[in-house]
Length: 250
Figure 1 (cartoon, rainbow, N blue to C red):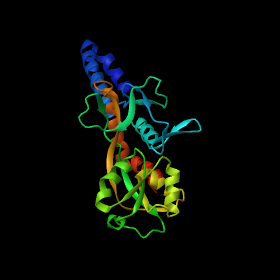
Figure 2 (figure 1 turned 180 degrees about the vertical axis):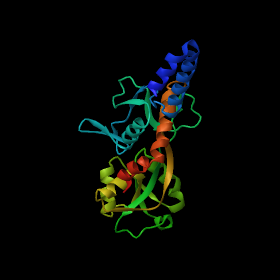
Figure 3 (figure 1 turned 45 degrees about the vertical axis):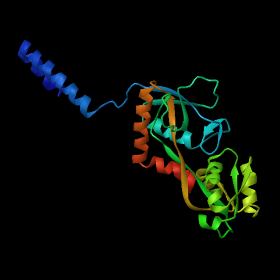
Figure 4 (figure 1 turned 180 degrees about the horizontal axis):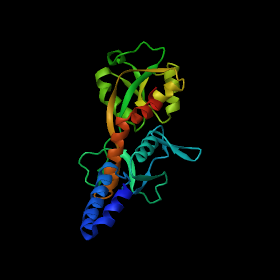
């Protein structure tokens, strides 16, 4: 191709110079369309995660781990985001994880990456399998949790006695040992505890409590929001998202 173009250029003078120039532009356009670089301007973003929000985000051996960190890293690989995850709020950051809040004009949100829910959990030896069988039962909740909110809402209907805990470990043990009939807890957390060998089981579907998302100050970091949303869709489409969830649910 190069030799033929050089021959035309030498043979035909100014006229062929013009033809050659147009041809070169045409070739460059073809390469731009057919072989795009795919490398937009890199977006540098620092994301603040909670260091004590197991299993969503936590620190282990100096590294930030958890569902949120896994999803962020997977999305970054599919986009132009250069990511830094921190856990110290004193540091400057662009984005943070949180729950989608309706009507808030302080923040702009990414697409939700997970629907959080609470689920009723009981001993693996328990015969309780429906809400109707909770009538007059004693159930545990973690103080200040979504489980406490939900249990307080249904307590009058089922005449529940609600016991409040500050320690999840104590609540799990009391359930295994029959000191309470069960408890309402975060679904993802319970699944991991059962996966680790806890003698517990769940029933009914989880009760959705919140859409988890990443938030930036309103009107800022639009490029990050767009890139994250595109990257999230990519990992959903190629199965990466489901493989990440499997680490926490099966």
